[in-house]
Length: 220
Image (cartoon, rainbow, N blue to C red; front, side, top):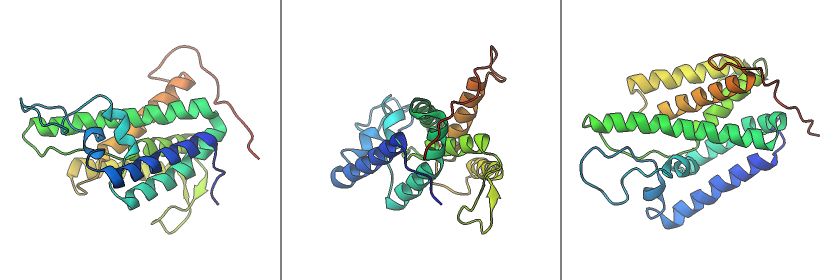
């Protein structure tokens, strides 16, 4: 059973769909300048094919095809609404944006390192980094919640699901067994989500007074 669609989650869904429609009608004029490109180590400029700071944000609202969009939006709905109901709109939006920007920062570092070594230069796009951050947050707040996630043919706890997806992202990212997917963006989204929740809780590696439990809100 899907959770109730809440305002910030709904706004993020609409923004992603709207940007995808713009891509369909205006690409590559929209896609190339706003996708995430690695840092330029070549010594010459390729117009529309170089890193710009805004790409850390804009690339997270773009998608390569309809299936890519559909999978990410379904996950955003499933994991985003329960977190928004728990944290409230402001804290949830902060969490999502930190995960998205952190994911793209990690992806930028990896692709730039590959490009600096003479590897292939390619752009990255998609909301997956932010979505993996939401998955991590859901697993931390509701670790024992049972769910069925395709293609796993049985109920699985949220905490176990986070571990499986994180391990798969690390394995595929290191080995290169699944090219064309931003595995390090996925890991980056999970990492920054974990750090932010630890910061809110006043837990290591952050010190100071405990900031208290997440704010609760009842949604009927």
